[in-house]
Length: 118
Image (cartoon, rainbow, N blue to C red; front, side, top):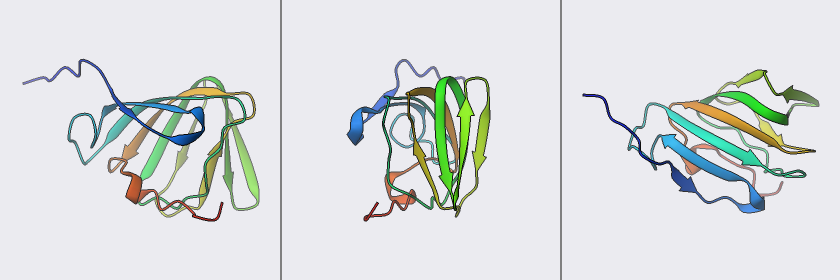
């Protein structure tokens, strides 16, 4: 039977970014996939991480910067980026962004493996 998600789970994060998870651990109890709407303000960043999940990110507004190795990929509205499990990456914005992220398997904070020193 289809299941309607009436409202997303709000996942608290520092730095002014908002995460609304529609499908995943916090919202629906699903562990195989998570789907979240994110809004990151200008100047937001997070530590480098090497997650144990693949992440498919579609930028709806603004620009998302993804640092990987010695390079940075700029992903603008209308574009997407795929990061694979085990890749060392960091997400950030210069001017802000609104985007949707799909993680396989589902996102869990302990599975992001964020650097403590970044």
